[in-house]
Amino acid sequence: MKLSEYIAKIKPLDADAMQAARLRQDTLTKPIGSLGRLEELSIQTAGITGQAIPRLRDKCVLVMAGDHGVVAEGVSAYPQEVTPQMVLNFLRGGAAINVLARHVGARVVVVDMGVAVDLPDHPGLLKRKVAYGTRNIARGAAMSREQAIQALESGIEVVEMQIAQGMDLLATGDMGIGNTTPSAAIAAALSGASAADIAGRGTGVDDAGLQRKIAVIERALAINRPDPKDGIDVLAKVGGFEIGGLAGAILAAAAHRRPVVVDGFISTAAAMIAVSLAPQTRHYLIAAHTSMERGHHKMMEWLGVSPLLDLKMRLGEGTGAALAMSLVEAACKTLAEMATFGEAGVSEKSAA
Image (tube, rainbow, N blue to C red):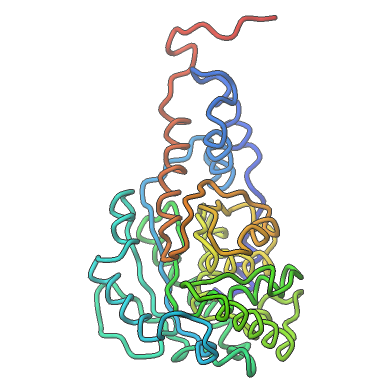
């Protein structure tokens, strides 16, 4: 199915399911509203899934990897060869995302969207390489429009595969040295914020490195002039292959009424691309956490989402999203498994 067909499939949340979930929440053995965001999460998930009592049995963390030509501008504290090295670490199960995914009972799916070298075959690796890294956005477009669409549609295809395996809940993750720079450029292009307001230290650049990074983003925006009314143009001009893949994955999950737990800075940039293409998608998003990257709050404000956690994290990989998955699951379990006042024989609130 083509991108335009997926966009057309994304519908508003199911109001009847949300109302049924809300009514049930109000009969459970607790003061109304006392579970706070957990109650809101359960109601949102009911609306997303169309189930008054949603059941989340299969959790998938999708980690997409790609390299970026802009690293030639000195925007990262780490060399580009770290990208394939970390992908191999994911496949061996030794990275933070592997540990946290095991902790919450989620499976990790790793996708090569545009790593700059060939990776060995591995049963845990999906190869969807669009190209061997993007071009340098400080000197021209990151990719062609056709490549941007390919990245989006590859993300859709990967999620189709996961849904066929039973996926109920998707979390987004990323790997790509230098990818906070295109993510900041995407956020600035779509939100209208300045590069200085969005760009952060990424992997840990010093003050001079941060100023260089801001200048690179400003140059990329000036040279490429991405159209904020055209998400595909923004992705093609200043984005990344893994960012496009994640945006497509988000669109596919929304089209199939699956909740999407969005990780940090890079995943949020991908969510912005998805929402720019299909505004209804924002209602399917659950913001996992607040990244330490400077502009993450502005990006979440643009999306209209509020983060569940603030753990001072800035790793990526889907680590914050994996942790937040457990909260989404907990919210749905309280809705499904708590007794009502009537079932428990507990007296309800006295009338005034």
